[in-house]
Amino acid sequence: MTTSSRPSTDRRPRLDASARDHLWMHFTRHSTFETGGEVPIIARGDGAYVYDVAGRRYLDGLSGLFVVQVGHGRAELARAAAAQAEKLAFFPVWSYAHPKAVELAERLASYTPGDLDRVFFTTGGGEAVESAWKLAKQYWKLVGKPYKHKVISRAVAYHGTTHGALSLTGIPELKQDYEPLVSTAVRVPNTNIYRAAEGLRNDPKAFGLWAADRIAEAIEFEGPETVAAVFLEPVQNAGGCFPPPPGYFQRVREICDAYDVLLVSDEVICAFGRIGSMFACTEFGYVPDIITCAKGMTSGYSPIGAMIASDRLFEPFRHGPTTFLHGYTFGGHPVSAAVAMANLDIFERERLNEHVTATAPAFRRTLERLLDLPIVGDVRGEGFFYGIELVKDRTTRETFTPDECEHLLRGFLSKALFEAGLYCRADDRGDPVIQLAPPLIVDQAEFDEIESILRSVLTEAWKRL
Ligand SMILES: Cc1ncc(COP(=O)(O)O)c(C=O)c1O
Image 1: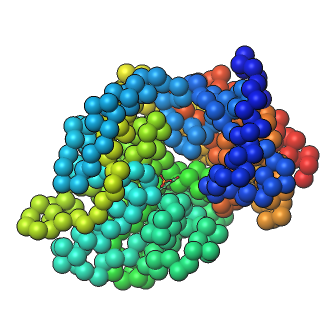
Image 2: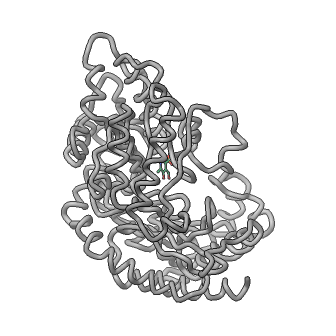
Image 3: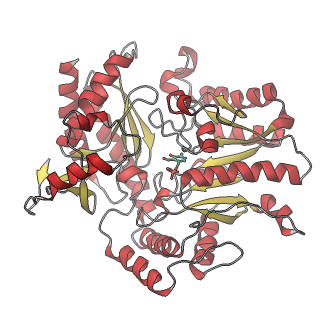
């Protein structure tokens, strides 16, 4: 951890006590703070770095939460928000429009492939996923296939926390306390080639076809007349960055067309430059029926999300009293829409997608240096989005027991990485991985800094095992 020139202030103890008493942190084991752990309180950001209330500096290796694409401290985004709030702070998009929602919808549609032209705004990713599922159900009813209501998603995938999105999520530990969830969501294998069967591990194309065909199999098992949609991330985050093997999405598209099932590309993480293009489906050469997105649209300077549907899906809603009876008060919020427009201006002016495409190979090579450590089993990902899988034995790919994960990830790694000045995520939703997704402005100096901190902390972790 590096200390900035700013002196430490005495706000820390007061904020820490107050956080313990009042702030219910998300996905947080609060007992950590009951037994003496400090609440990490981040007070400001600048570029690729954030600073805590005591002035300590951390490299933001996760863009907050896969969000802050253009980096922290962009005054022009704050100005865009202020200007819009002065002019029109709020108006809903319920039967009305406001200029920024119109402009942003048109701009997003210009980035999408095919005829994905219809933008339904939400306030975040989970709501976009909910919206997509509801639209899929209603669409099939409107075109005379009323039994198509089930959805398919992949093992270990994360799609959000509301009842519908959580039902699509493939992480049993996140779901069990909230059952019964929606029972019409079905799981298929993901594209984790590192854990594929022996015969498929060294043949990505065959593995991709195998994984895609599991979707066809699930549709057959459920009955094609009952399946509405398949939800897939271009690169699956949970489990530690599973890119699609070559041919995977092409086969999935064929399957969806053959069975009349909608393909939803959940790009809540992958859109807006994370993989090097505005929408990652274009990167992998497929055209979905719906895209869900959020996070990077504003780089987090104000919340917004969207479900973007094809003209075909909108068609039945053009006629008579037919209405998508769905909405969110803050969906398409004027301030967020204005910030999104300014954020996308930065993308274009600074050619951030081109930067990601050009430097991603160097990022990968830098992280792959870690493969000389006995604890590093695999480095995988695309663009500025990587997972590093940790193993007990590189040869056999043996993973850690739940107790070892607890001791390694929660007991040591997360805290040690943070203390060493790197904010990222040590995750065990699936096999244990370190997740990295820095702001899209970073370059070799930050790649090296990430590698160097990981090297020292992982070396120490191995000694402690
Ligand atoms: C792929 C994916 N879908 C949906 C969501 C849910 O988004 P939100 O937290 O904005 O509701 C996330 C969140 O990380 C995500 O990664």
